[in-house]
Length: 601
Picture 1: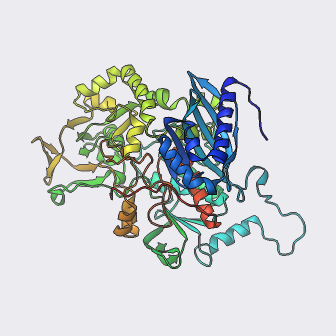
Picture 2: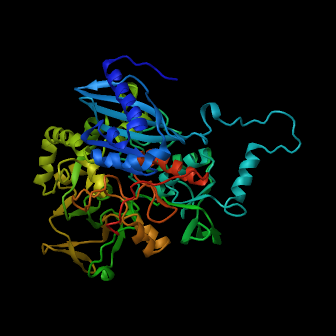
Picture 3: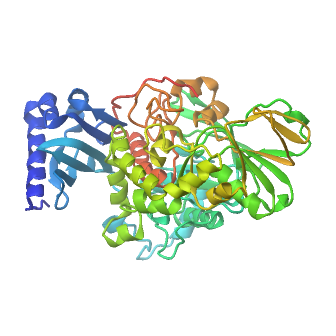
């Protein structure tokens, strides 16, 4: 059904869509590209490219269209609601179809030309999700001597998958990423098995240090299909998240094997399937999925620096991912190496439990107060006020996705300048304590740092005040040179007595899991995960414009990476599930614009 929207902004947007439709059908790629600003952007999430790809400038847009138009056959470009005019930038929500899919998008126009266009695949026309009008009946009315109940069918499926029936897709990693993707695939009738070495869904959260909470607010963190209830806390404690994930897995009827470790995997080119060896509760099994997803978390294997004297240390030492919490260390001397989120959380919890704790800061950290992040950065899309204003989680995700990464800093720099001004006293107190601060290489703040390097920041929920006051001791501009049986010697020559050393030193790239599970050769073939090639600290170029290897085809056939924070896992699982479903159903998926591999780790 087409609507006729009458505001001047809507008329301008629909006229542009009509022109695009006409030029795509009659005049071709070059003419269509002329409808964009010379440096305009087209960000495509699977709809045209079967990839996650941003085209920058008219030439890249024309080249993409030349390669994809024949099989995509787009049409029926419509406004979804009234467009808006914000200081001369017209913004419009749009819908369109391709040969195989229903799609949705977002358009920004300036002076009649497209500044940004987002196109996303929503649903495969022949394989819609079974929800809304298409939801299953559940009850089987009528008389049937051989009737199976819903529970019996479910039990039969659970008992056969991985034994007499092979999953089409195997997801290694049963955290929020793997579970959310599993829910999407279940809705699409893709036989999927999720495995995790821990016993129950949510255990990865339950086993972390006691004080761990989400630092992102609840509106940012919903799972697919099943949002948190209205009374859910703004910052969810780890055990609540663990219980939610366990409940979600059961309610969404996911095939989940806990206490199951993948010991090896290799791709059989002839059979076009993976041969995956797993150990399930001591039982050795071989699985043969067609598609393998590593959902082992955005972080790879823990980074533990090799420091002379580590083997001589008579106290306790562990990586932050193994830290049990502060309770056992009352009265102990603790050295925490690192100054990002985990380091701050751990130092604060140790201090609360009466430990004598020193943070060692090797390089500068971006700090933003939690309230300032909520107010200035996330509030417009992810807050109670946004919900009251009619913002949905899905629309918030698409709005966020509509800003190409190349220009995202332009949107963020002014916000963080406001934060720096507003919280000037807070930052001054930290610097006075010797803390090294930054706002990212270009002043673009937290989210760009997260996208570029997935490290180097802390959302302050209290630890910064302890550093400013000296309650958490600080050694900055230095690191550990060597370790003695009872102390650490720093590069500035000072010595700190220590009963415990915590390495809050981050994680390697996700392809480290590919090296461990599959082979170093395959890990090198796909290359580094995460980062965009921004040529900023820890994100070497060349520029790619999207996150490397995430949620899209890789250089290894049938190997996928899924991860990120709860927002990214929720949103991008939609596109990954559609790519997997299309392959299962034999839909042609010609991938456009696969990037070269430049970085291996």
